[in-house]
Length: 279
Ligand code: AMP
Ligand code: ZN
Ligand code: FE
Ligand code: FE
Image (cartoon, rainbow, N blue to C red; front, top):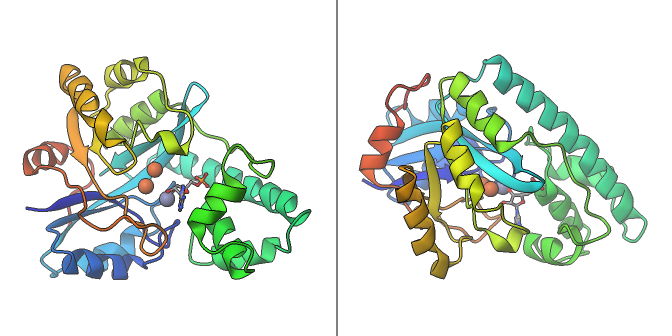
């Protein structure tokens, strides 16, 4: 069984449509794929239709933008009720905040570069959630940078004058909110240092106490030499160890199934959740 529970479609900042993603997951030899677009569930319907009869199983989820104290973190949420009040409120708040923040970033960039808000709207046309990758795509389309990586490295990382923060709920509240919606949560890439500051070590215990189910240990952004320590923390706290690709289509080099989650952890994840695995 090959299980990759962290992928994105073009309903957020991936480049495959949900149907294309399902097709790519089959071609990559996966048995189970998880779709977790950022702060939206708009891809669930198309992915569900595409997966029926394909031999592949789909886990529906969402990558929730959150923070631990003032450090940005991502929480993977799985198999929750998408119509739950907390979930709907979160998605609406993030969509609104993300759009305002992206607009502000483009205004700042436009003082130095030939890029417009219309460019970003075009780059994000398929997506419910506007993010920095779409600003990056607009900069690429204008020939200002070669690719998303260069855009992040040079112009839109938090150390630049163009970066603007967005609203995010506290991670403990996300863990509780998703549990209240019948889902389970996994802390994504906790030691992804190259994305910015990482959350303090106490965060593991705090999230575990709030009901966190697992932690993504095997992920390319957690430095290899730290994964042993990460695995120890996870085991001590009785959390489940996850591994996944964070596939974004052509938006990132991450390839489907480059890291996977064990069948034992998967079986445990899907017990007692609001939503079912579809196949
Ligand atoms: P945002 O939530 O709008 O701040 O954007 C963060 C998103 O950008 C995350 O989904 C990351 O996967 C993506 N991202 C971060 N760094 C890079 C990079 N160097 N190249 C492509 N995508 C990136
Ligand atoms: Zn992303
Ligand atoms: Fe993430
Ligand atoms: Fe992700």
